[in-house]
Image 1 (cartoon, rainbow, N blue to C red):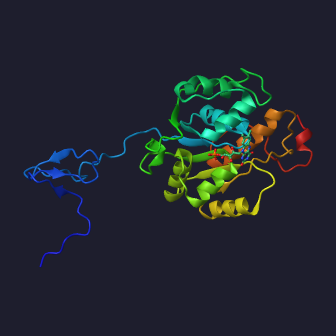
Image 2: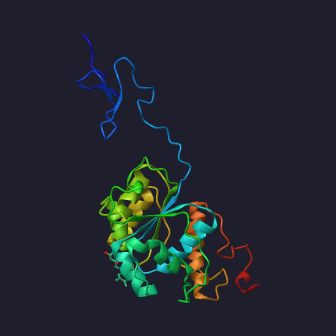
Length: 264
Ligand SMILES: Cc1cc2nc3c(=O)[nH]c(=O)nc-3n(C[C@H](O)[C@H](O)[C@H](O)COP(=O)(O)O)c2cc1C
């Protein structure tokens, strides 16, 4: 008796030609006389671009997101950007910028050039290697584990996003991309911004920690000698980049000596 294989990578089409079951468009890949190659028509991964996905959700703290984005781009990293619907309100409230999908490059450039103190054109930023995905686009690259990325940073992370990530809701592209990071065991950094925290959010944060995410609250420290609001923002952004393993010079590191914050 012949046993049927549990997994048959190539199936016969009615006309005797072969159709690869993973080829969503049903392209005929060969014939009975010329069977498909060993990869069965699946393209090897050759794309070199491997970005960080940055998800901006609707918590207060858009300057943190701007500083992280600048840090990644300064370090030569590629970025795939997702801006949640709610974060457009916080961005509008905190910067006066109405972020538009159709004009994202202009709006992003204006945003990233702005200092945390509100001064425009404080930073010169090239947003050349940013790929933007609309938050409602669940067919976007980062919604699949086969799309090559280094990991994802959610900054700032709302408690709603934290809940969605912990429960795997995938209600938009930001949450879906974060779920993909966890299932693929890729880095996920969650910069939660809320105070005080209720028990629900604390439990969700523990769930994320146990799932392998780095929970990195937007919690500036004062040992690095901050004198301006940008220093406090850059401290948090620098700690995010530390967690991602991305080099930066955003804050003065602790050197093991008290009083270092007052040194030049
Ligand atoms: C001006 C403003 C500030 C907000 N700040 C916070 C905040 O700091 N933390 C938070 O968890 N939610 C905050 N919210 C509420 C979130 O935007 C809301 O929960 C939203 O549903 C989050 O959706 P998202 O996670 O899909 O972006 C704020 C809302 C507004 C309008």
